[in-house]
Amino acid sequence: MAGIGKTALSQMIFCNSKVRESFLPRIWVCMSKQPNEDSDQKKELVKRMLMCLGVEDEIIASVDGKHGLKGLIFALRMQLVGKKYLIILDDVSNFDETLESGSSYDEEMGEQIGSGLPKGCGGTVIVTSRDEKVGKQMVGEDNLHKLVPLSDKVIWLIFKDSVQEDGTELPAGLETLKDDIVNKCGGLPLAAKMLGEIMNKNLRAIANSSVNTQQGIQQPKSLKGLIVFLVDKKEYSSQLRTVLRDDTEKLLVSKPQDKE
Image (cartoon, rainbow, N blue to C red; front, side, top):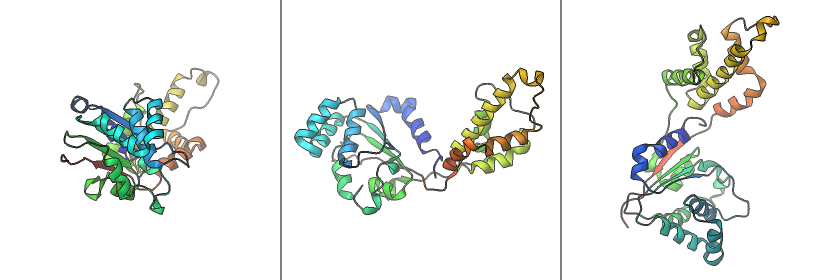
């Protein structure tokens, strides 16, 4: 389910002070960027990891040209050997649309790339994906961690925090709309944050408009009218549909076993 918090949770882990102290290097690989149609997807993944590790493009291209995938995987291993690394591969579900053909993320691919991830020093890989099939093929079913929609109480807190982010006061009567707002969010933190930011923006616009009263511009008769305006306004409808669309999202965690 999009917007359920897989990336946000991974970012919290990635930026946690204890994690920063315990893991070096730490790299974040954004997988939502589509590779070229003609590119080797195994190479593409390894190249992205090498780039995030600070290896120069010219060196990566040279290794690829001389030794291909095996050379790239060896280079990755040399960058990580003896280190307690943390690698996050974010949004793998969008990396390849040919999964159903069986040509991607197969066991052979996992074994090949896995050989570039040294074991024995506590190295960890976190993979986020909306596709459970991708997750199982990459990390195994035992390592899946499924996120669930948040409680109404937590969603309401996220919404209010977003409204008040810059010190904006909560409008009177907001509590009367709690159920409607929470239902709109469907348990998704991203939806709650987005609706809160939209309300914040419009409340600030109203508060900062010193000429409204002077020019006789009628203010919204009720908070409910403002909420309906925000939710139904055309420019936000596509965003909300994206946030609330009903697909599957997982947080997938894989930790290489500490043995050679």
